[in-house]
Length: 282
Image (cartoon, rainbow, N blue to C red):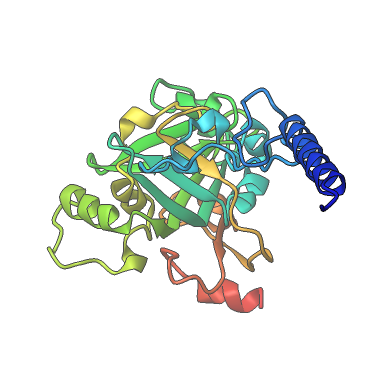
């Protein structure tokens, strides 16, 4: 007759081992389960974050202007006119329309107007009226005026009473189709042909048409407004700048020839190129 005790002993030992392993497995964390929101992302749990939404994502450009990381603040505009006119070259002007379409253009041409002493400025002699009040407001305030009874021009106030910078030309960056439509709709006597990109904003009134800027923007603050603001231009080397006489101020005496217009050398988006000034500054 066979001795069955060793076999029985082995079966009892195996059963105890299985029970022991099962007990240990219940005490270990479940690596496959999803951690609760209160659990930290550490240990064996892999935090995948919230599920991706299937709807359209909100661009950073549709955040409120206060939260926009690239927006230029009041301190940027708080500098003398000539310095601001140069500093604005390369920065990006942004216009948000009512339907949230955003139009963008890089500034490539400016003119500085230096206040009461400047015979070409609307504030010459210290005159201050309801029309030019924006020139006397804090730096970064918009001054919009009308020429020929139908066209608008956009200026930004700088340091100094009655001093400002005229934006003369932009390089269109975004929303070009909308700019085309606005130019054809708002442009008086338009030929009906499709404008080239370089023709959309190559003049102070043209850029106002392309960005739908009118007198209602007068005295707005670029640092806080929700429909128009400025952003830092893309990083890179500073462009070569040409200093030339301003355009359309021939009656301003000696001030007519002062080199207070600044533009990016070689840019095809500039309104008027001064070859003589470029040769002298080569």
